[in-house]
Image (tube, rainbow, N blue to C red; front, top):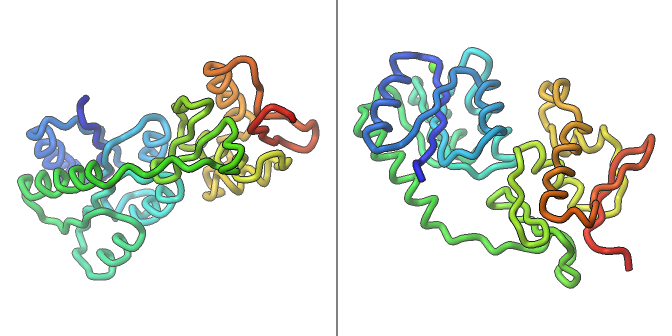
Length: 235
Ligand code: CA
């Protein structure tokens, strides 16, 4: 499968260099110039790696990285016009995998990206830990390092928001969460919460669970209160 890379960069000339360098390695690059567009892209489909500029018109790449790391371990290579020590330290502290100062050569960029991809592939596959109770297991398995959840043994293809929503429910099965509490868990960035309603994502999440096993409906609606998650058959 072709390696998919998301490039977040607002300068066309630099974006072209990056795309050229990555195409030379046979990688497929999707180019976005705003943090908002990049987040929409990342929640819509999985990427193997993100090349992220710091200075973007609608915000900082570092802020984007911070939000991203709450729910994703996708490798991130930071590009910065200011090769400042502070940016580098902050970027790596926030969970970036590498840091490249501008200007850079296409060859250098390609080599760094390849090294990060190789590292990501080599790091041992994390054990899939039962989400709640190791004794009972339950229907769900949360694999936090990979930001993925299995239901009845099968991986769910979740968007970032569906993942965060289900993870929040899963951390406290049977607890009734209000919509506001679910929003806090899944939408740490309040600015993003306006357009995305909990109900919409619950609906798509239910459809995905139903696809795997139509005989159970783990998400329960509590009228006027919110939602809770059942992880096993009632005793
Ligand atoms: Ca820039």
